[in-house]
Image (cartoon, rainbow, N blue to C red; front, side):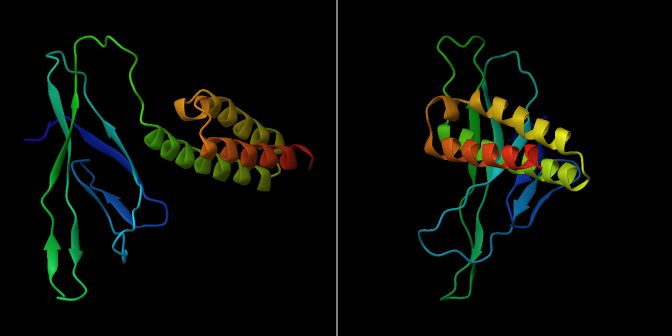
Length: 169
């Protein structure tokens, strides 16, 4: 069974319609049409309670449901349970997935840009510049940025340009 205290807090799915139920127990993303080898990335934020026994915790049960275009049948793939280890102590440095870190940075950057644009449109350019500046400082501390990830480098460049445009207005 799933850990009853785990709750979805958000699904960042870009322009795809997504939903988290009011109790945070389930959610879905409607992806629409995909070609055979296409992939999509989504960032799912979950609240995980502290656990003392050091066991493995099941977090999410993921399932894919789609319509086969040839047979017109609805196909439900076998669900997968995503689990994490919950050791009492962590001996080595925790390894962060660069891909997950990159996606998280992408969504957080988009949120910072939206906030900054709204402030700039409201003529509060100093606050807009501060939002971008603070996010750039936080971005620089992420594992993907520290590893020289190309996406983070170009994201920071874009944020820097936005910050400079706002500062010069």
